[in-house]
Image (cartoon, rainbow, N blue to C red; front, side, top):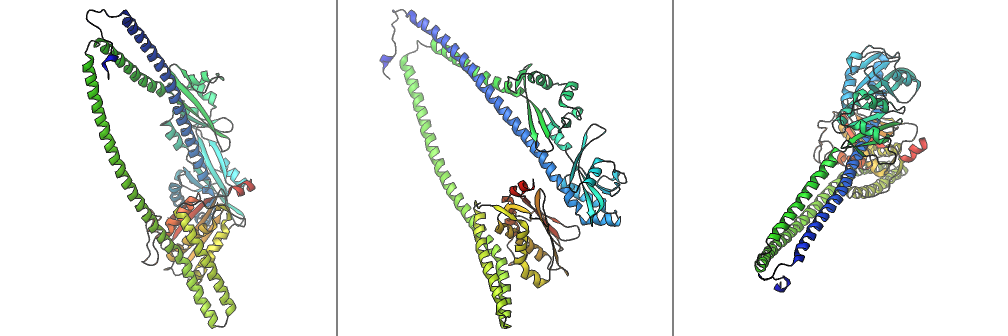
Length: 589
């Protein structure tokens, strides 16, 4: 840097007065700039943190309402299943309730309900998970009265004497078109109040009449929102802030009162006109902004101190300053060169690691697809072998027409094998095959047709319970048939050591399509690892352990779930639940 750019003064030459005024002007400009920067930073951070807090509150409230609605929808299916439970129906027919309560207790832990009651036709509690309710008469309860008047599952909200509410689903049980009893399932919504109270400042749920039925504040239940706020103190200023901001129709929902910001959020729960309201404080916004502003002010103070220090050092030789700056630049340049070299080495190492990971992933996918194709083609090949043997026997007996029918079935199985390979490729790479509304009863019929030769050979008794009306789901026919064939095959293998093998198939509609496949075999030893790939209890050569893993993946992709459990009377039960097609729901409505 040339030395002529630095103003030079001699000892005999007085310092120009303009430098003094220039220093004062620089100081004033520095203070003005610092003030403007701090003011703009305050506005920007306040708005940003406010939006962030509002978004978190909205997401949290959406999660609350979603969990509440999910709990209600999940429990609504329980009365339908229990109304068809053979143990409960048998107990009502024989008036033998010795083991019924224990049977309900085994269900309540798995379902997650608050309690389950079984009432006879007179309203007397004959079985319950809460043994203190045995023998009580509930014929005057709304859950019993409304269930007798309807053929569907009835939801009731009953206020308790303590001020809380009891939420129940009830459904009548009919045997041979005659009333046998009523099943009542109590929904456990109190657990949501406890979880909300540990995160949000205040959360309430009101019914269609505006009465509070769920609240993190117990004193607010059974009151309207205005009544609750008028009788409850507000140690965090929520009530006072809401009263003030409720009248500010021209201002946004959030406002500051007494140094603390609050916000009221309300959304609708798509269930019987319920609404959820939450109150969220904004006390952390000001603290975070002030902390950042404190660091910013400290930075400006340091800069001002450095400026004064540099001004006092103005008499230092310019040559020394240039030397120090050059040394600093050289050090910075060397540091940058080292950092660039390190980054280049890291990038090369990262490229090698990415290539290695990509190759490993390709090999893993290739192995999984090979094992899957081998497993899925075993069943059509076994069926083809049976049909070929039958065709050979028919030709020996001079019955060519029936043999041609067997060859036609073999041709269909070959087409199905081609479809299986295409579907497995789509499953491996998460393809985008178009889904269409299909009747799940047809899928059950096709799967049974494919398993028919093996079933007939072992004289397996098949019991089918299908509804008269179509059960439409949004899915892919071939992949659903794969799932059903896998389930039937597992049931077939599980009952091979039973004297009278039997497989029950139950299809039910409603808010979700349900398919139950039950056998009378020895049951499942390890339910936790049942759906993991390559897990199998069969002998080598009988299976590779991919059937249930693939089936579970197919059902999950279609938006459903596949579960398994051991049946109380022996054997295993697989339950596949799929969402009903939107077109069929619209037509039903």
